[in-house]
Length: 198
Image (cartoon, rainbow, N blue to C red; front, side, top):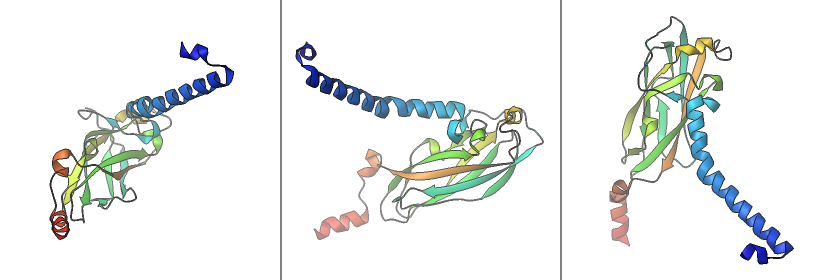
């Protein structure tokens, strides 16, 4: 009703504003979850797949798996793979560990984003369990070793784009995230001392 009362320029302005709001909502709310789901299902962009159990078939062909680690700018943790490379048969279940350390005097939460390279292997590199599935919280000075259980799907040998890959790199980047409410409520000794001084 109000739209009909607007003249040419005002009507165009309202239409453009409505379009901008719709596009912003779609970009922020709808597209990211869909894109995340799409990448996990298809392995697009080197996103590893997930599975409950390993396959029954183990091939004689082996692959070298490289493990890579980094942290986003401003994330105070140190983060590295415990072992940098591993040889594994296609279809065999592998277990690797990454080590994270919180050198600060306060608890810090983090989540890990991940991908594999080359991108063509994303749909075949499959995780069963991984620290990256949930948020991790490290207490002041805490060091932890976090496991990832994985396999390379035997169907990789039937893919002409991935069949001749001899090496796959699994990369993680840790990003700082807000602490869960129960963790955020805890005070560190440094915070108590600061409050006492003020």
